[in-house]
Image (cartoon, rainbow, N blue to C red; front, side):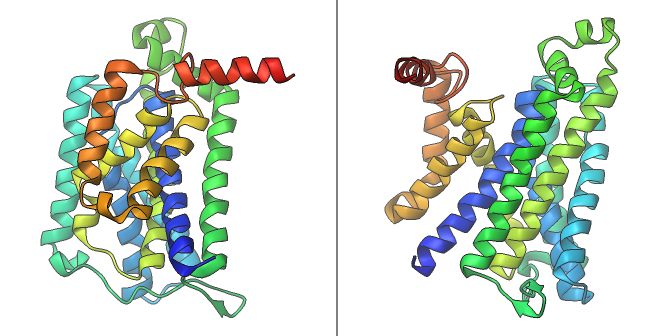
Length: 294
């Protein structure tokens, strides 16, 4: 496998993690966010600052990126307790702009020049930035994120998320603490995105504010909606297709945000459940084939 294909596979794994993490917030708990790239960036900058500026190990930076981003997500989730739906979308969008502005204009975060010379991870004396070892690390984390998502979908927490998503007033009426579970959803979703940010920073070796702009939040949400929001399979398939295609087809790369926007509009018009969402045309066909095969 060439270095280029390995790099694409690493990027796909990171964005699969981001799509799965956003799906916990938007698909499970029904809190639509257009600021997920902010959590991605907070994780990346946390790990970058700790390792490049303060000499901490990758593993310390990785763990603290998850912890700090999760705590930040819980705090930034507080507006969801007072606003819903369209207004929440605007709030999360604003959060993304504020976070990127802090990265760009505050010297502590490196300003517009970002942070460079981020060290590669090392384990048992072996240092690796790219190649198969890093690919395994990224996909282990992606599988761990999938495991967290699956676990949540089978527990009382997942049931509470679903109840909040369907009807907040009804959820409160049956004893579900809507504020508490909203904060849980923001914290878990943000923490997982923070880990993806750390992996991204150490793979690239540098971080810059423009990587985590609002358009990237649109891209992550597009992956979730395109694949099938609220399912486990959908965000994975959506991220693989929408991240791998522009990377493999270089002439599409410059127009990827246009592609994401067009796909969002088309999916909303013709397949609102997504490519592999519950009751979608393709998923219904595949289920019929599975039944015939069995």
